[in-house]
Length: 121
Image 1: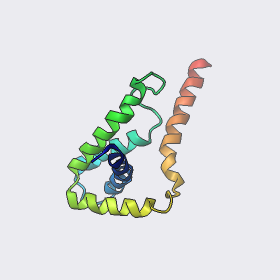
Image 2: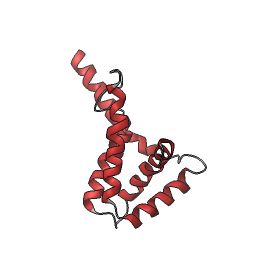
Image 3: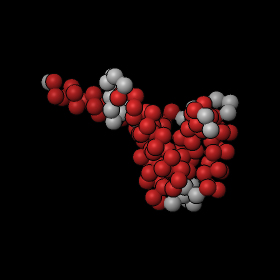
Image 4: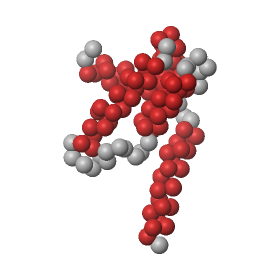
């Protein structure tokens, strides 16, 4: 599998992992790791800030794919295949318009902004 195929697979695996979170046949350990993976993928806060040269993008290139691979290994193969198919059908035409997925990210940013304002004031 070349790099382009891996990137395409990651693009469908992240939504598939999110779908696997809501399935009853996904093991509890996989759900915990899946939640961490999806939260890290959607979070605007990186482990290593992007403005640090080279190292800033290292977490996006290494940590996120490693979390995805770990999560996929914990989810049973038949469950993951079903989630991938559902993910591909959701993202085939356009991205889903579910604005409420952005609420946790916005809440984190507002919390950080309030902390900065409080610290300065």
